[in-house]
Image (cartoon, rainbow, N blue to C red):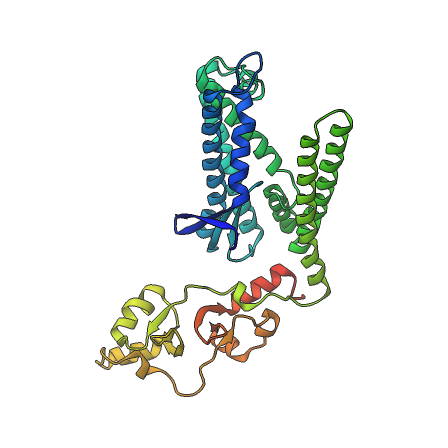
Length: 389
């Protein structure tokens, strides 16, 4: 994306950050340096900036841990992550598809806050080892300037304060926060309707946005700085906008069939065989390990050559012809396929999909980009409210 910087890959998942994120980090270092500034006031010195930088580095590590909590839990459930994006208010794991069950929704949503909780717990343990194991003492080290008696406890205390506030805020039951997704999974589980879960938590998000805006106005009237009010209004606007965006597709899906395209739910790593692979190689690399009924056969250019059935491969092997090329085993006639922009409600009416159980998906150039199964399409339509009854 334009205006973004690549930060590399972790677990095979790309990480990007906008320029505004780096500016935000510099601002955080400056703001948090006041916590470690000279006793009695005065501008922060080099030590203060150094300690605040350590806190910000720990914050970034915890933030990445939070987002990869979502990503790795999604991967465990069969949901890939296309990338992790860092920006001013945190991060976002771009998942390849929405959750299909309340359980998936809950596990993916809760995995991020679970990592944040662990980060806060580690910081609390460090403070406790320095200042004693009183909960009051541990909290005050992070929330009060200079309450800690050692540098280690001051740094850990501020990390604890930042992570605890982030955790509590993120668990509020309102979209687009993780707590909203957790609440959505609960409503979905009780009512059986993901639409009702989305509608409830989106409205809660809009109410939260209004509440934060009113609180910002109250603080400004009571004498808080314009800077504080600005951030309250910005946060309120962000939550309102995202909660409102969640309501729009919900209302649209209530009025008619799903507008989701095939490309959003397809398997992007289909089982495939090269056209010049032998029957033995096809059995060893595709049909044996994956247990599929058929696999797509691709030419050197990535274009679809046909669909190879496992029974045809086994017949050739039983006949003692393991070196027969896969291309020679393809059935004659038209090769069933679909495109990545076909709506799922239309795809479900495809006779080839019903017969085969899945179809190869081609992009606009005719290159195979995945395989979509009838079950995946059906589940996506149920989740999004596109199927009735």
